Image (cartoon, rainbow, N blue to C red; front, side, top):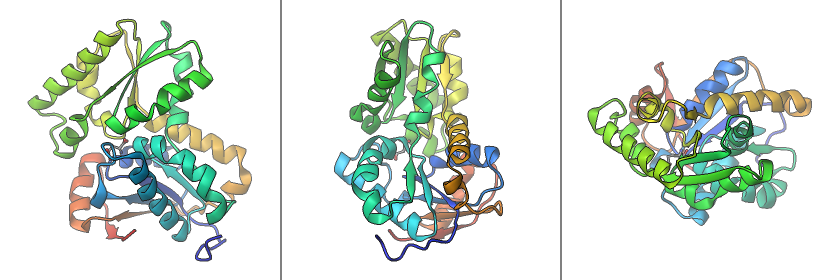
Length: 279
Ligand code: DGL
């Protein structure tokens, strides 16, 4: 048990490697506006998508511990790479030492739960960071829930930098969006559903829809994660009671405050104030 943890109710924590989790946070806040939130972006050490298992696990555990110390009883890993590489290990190895009553949830399971009902061909595609693809977390989760569904995955290493450099709507983005979509569909032309398994990809959605064949369902995660959290809090009144409700949101970054506020405007339609934090 970590003795710096307080038992009084607190905000819900949302963690991401950087800015991308803001796409998840904004959907969560739309669905559950009454709750308090703390967003933590590890911008000083992102991207996570190209890092090894061990490093993503260590960084994510530090962030979760810090969010617990800041008063959160429930933490959502808004980052796919962290959900893929660190969530299970934290749930199995670390939670009981930190505090058995706290919870950490990810974004993969809520996303996967909907695919069985969407694909008619039972062939789906996953577009994500190299780390998420390499972890095979999506195909493994999908096999557990829908054993008849085939998954083909493709890493899209250029999509995160396009978004972070504010080029999502620029002409250069078209080339890389077509390239990865074509490569994925060349692997399996029966794909009728594509999961965008990375926090940044919803910002490319307009162009992804433009270049993907019309019949393909494109799945973004924000609403799915938000609905799943709503359901979780409903099913776990003991956890719901530990989440405070004043409608506030505090933002922390491990990088500079100015840099975060400036770039966060790519992901959020509001000006935010942010505090620096060390992990
Ligand atoms: N947030 C990460 C994810 O969803 C993308 C950015 C990164 O690679 O750190 O996988």
